[in-house]
Image 1 (cartoon, rainbow, N blue to C red):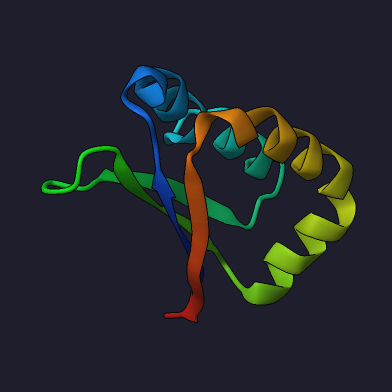
Image 2 (image 1 turned 60 degrees about the horizontal axis):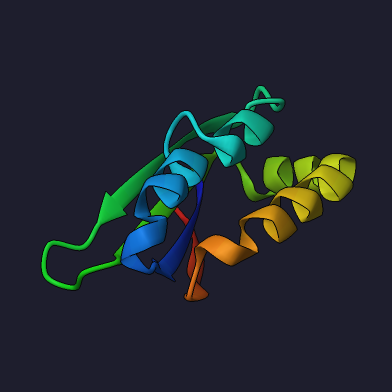
Length: 98
């Protein structure tokens, strides 16, 4: 399994829109679900730091994720631009093999 983690900082007034876009049924998960090798997304809210979230995207393999990106890059970039205004900061924590 290939897992990608992202950390986000969100302003209070954008929390609902962010959760809708980045949650397990959101825009990103809908896009990723075009691949049979996408295994799901989790959205975690920090218990101690207001407005801090982590996403966990799971794929069967790194190759599956790379193939998905190659095939759907314009849609990926479009959603990324659309969601840019929802985040105050974002950083990729890393990509991991389980």
